[in-house]
Image (cartoon, rainbow, N blue to C red; front, side, top):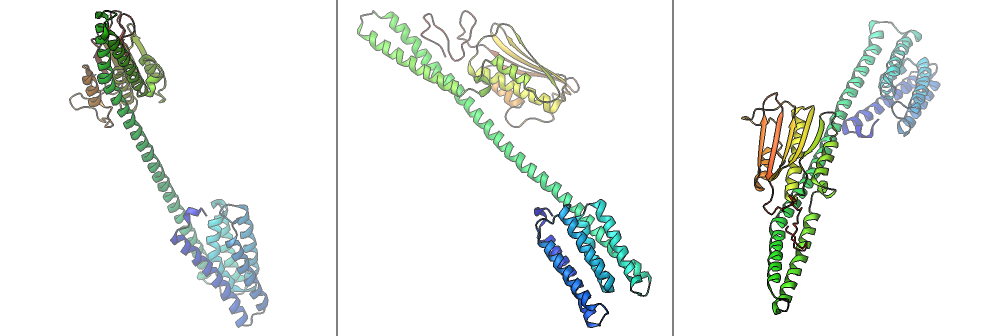
Length: 414
């Protein structure tokens, strides 16, 4: 039996089965000895042998359900019982605990025939010992067999149901642990993104402005002026601290963006979708330029959230992700052919983990952009986010990712 099945109830049932078989063997031996039966000595000896064999099998670790050892043990036990049954009619009552043993230890295809043979042997013992044949002669062993079969099969069904529930509970506990880990990871990444955005928008931008102002002051001073050296050292110090701030921003960048540009991250996102459907296609429109880290994070998170909604909720078969670079703005469009939803009622299953439509709108709004959703029942969904390029854009149309070039290349805007 499975060790998990050793509950107080099953343990009590096993002890009752042991006591029943031992009591019935003791009864057969005492009646044979007390009444002076012709084979009293042999009956007592066989009863003792069967009791010893039963005890040995019950304590043997190798005797487990559906094993060869259990089959051999039951065969030997049955042979001794048949010999005892031939000597004493009282041994027929031992058939009842044998029913339970056979049904428990043997597979169903062998257990049920073994019970039928045991019941037939018990009925035959009446005829062998010249007992009076009555309806009870047949009803008793057969009724006992029916009760044993019903009890064991019913218990097996309850045990299987209990095992299924236990597995479901284990799976639920495991899923809750995975969900908690995922939420902790998401919270950590969100905090990293927030810190990177704050450092970029405050410290890095401020140090970049200080560096530019000091460079302008340095150029306006004569080379031999006493203040020139101090201004140069201040500019170099601001430049070093700006580089350190940029290092912090890079260290706090989401892992998907650490391995390359936003375009590469979106391409990996499209190819990494593991569901059988939908088919995800990614395209780039316009000339790609480098974007500040907050822009890349906002666009990547929007794409991840919109794609996740298409995969999990809309039943879409095709999703198209388009990243468009324009003169003054950059936009991301995620279009699917799923079931859509009523814009007035909102989506049926909104992601409450921080990457739903409200979170996407808030992220776009924080960068001065907009997010629009076009959808309808059965018409698919189109999510579009547009972000204005930073005002510090260079003449060549490049927006530095956490840096901007000056004329000499030393003063870099964050």
